[in-house]
Image (cartoon, rainbow, N blue to C red; front, side, top):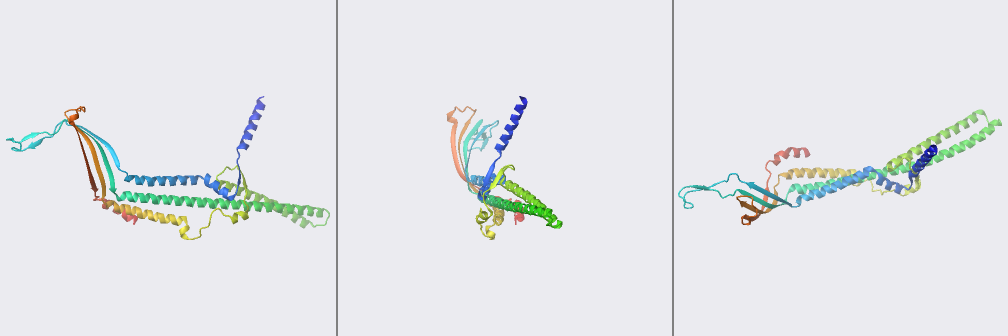
Length: 338
């Protein structure tokens, strides 16, 4: 009973393994689409583009106003005093008195809005340029994969044709050998010609075996470029003629402007120009709008229930920040980029 159970398990696993083997009947267009879908480098390139798109959004976030809440709770261990000269308040001698309270609490809502900042403008331009570079890299990767799959697909069709012709030659030389054998037995053929016919047949067999190996290697190479399992059954539905008449991409000509590598080089030069511009503009002033609305409590203790001691105030203003030593720090960077 145990042996029967063991045999049953083996047969079940064997049938499951065969059932899990995928079969593909692919035209060239379908092979290219499947390869672009399965290739991990294409998936990685898509994530790189998404990261660059998110970087563009982040660069624009610098213009969003910054709103923050603050709390300043203070206990004065010793109050500062103000000196009033004699005669100011009818006093005969100078006197000192304090205008502060023991506790001082300020709860505020603060706003900062950039109005002009060259760094933010250039950061957005640099992020957009980097996004364009990533898109060009993705186009270049997809073009390379399409080209490799197309070449592999054509190579399989060519090796299949060569293998078919080699098998036909083997069959023909086998027929010649049978005829030569009959003639040799009837002494109608000299031994030298008979041996030559044998050698031709053996060479045809070896050639057919080599062509079969080349065909299997071409199939495995196509599976690799499409990124499917090695044990998957693969059937090509296109012929050499149909593939040559309908390529999966349109030829764009050989002009330099149509090459992705050239466009990437131009974008890299633009990125270097923007980086240099960013360094040079770092010495420009930054202008921002700021404001605050606050509620202040001043009393001898932290008894916030004393409503009469609460006061409110607010203010708005414009801040100008002018770097002074930035040009000294950035001089080496500018020299390097030049």
